[in-house]
Image 1 (tube, rainbow, N blue to C red):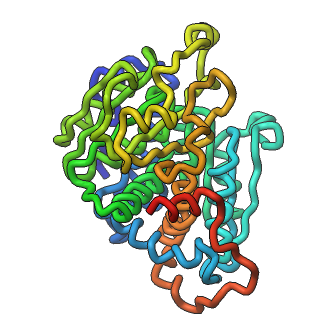
Image 2 (image 1 turned 120 degrees about the horizontal axis):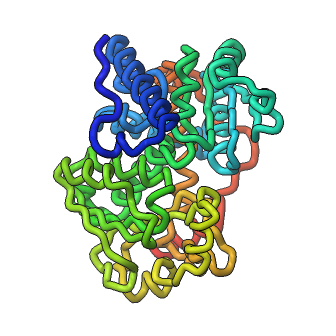
Length: 390
């Protein structure tokens, strides 16, 4: 089997020896997964480590599966298609939404979950290698979701097991399931508004350097018909140049602006990201101690500079503390704010990922039954505001 050279180009030469080694492992693992998928006739690989392994057909296929999962995700129907299957959730970095979303998605399909959080309660605290942990977990569970603070670590982990592994976030690297649910959200929002996705204008703002969600998202968006993408970030937190070059090479119009002070009245989607201060060095923490409000998305910015149909997304969590300059809470209840619809969409999309990787997507509708417990008509007040604004 011939593998593509892992890290060609100038960017690769700037990696440290350890980072380069992890990057090589990551690329080889992704290439092996794609080859195995093609041999089996699947539209996506046996692991989900990076969006690089996904074609436009694979993304569209997962969206179609997610649509079929909606009645189950919305608690109208019950399926037991994964009854007896066990998910191992290994989160070595803080998470609330992603971890519980994966848990809920697997349970909605009838499976059960075993999980661990942090290094303290893991054998890695005793010096166990990623290889050993992977091989052991592969003997215990049927699927694994892993989050780790080091880029490339999840791909290294996946090398040791035949059990499907999903990257739940690897440091500043990628977050493929988040990007998939983001694209799913965008397609649903555009359908609701009667807008075509082709030619849409998207604004990505915030921490574009360490925000792994935007790294995965911009690569997925590049698979679609030509888009216009505007990047706005504080100095020093710009989108990695190799991603900008990739998107431009695929025929998209990509531009950079210094702040949000200009008009964005033709923007269809704003995707804001939190400043990833936990990934800063001490020097960086000092230099970013007082970020200006030039990068804040709030109600005033939307009202003055954007369209009434602009939708606002954020991967969450958003930092609501004073001075954080993250997505403002004054947008709560505004129908343009799609962040909670976005998190809701994570359940059917992650169900789709599990169903596909575990090869039960064609069995889900068998034996569906109605739920027997109380389910509210809406999950939050934001949905009431959406109905009022529609």
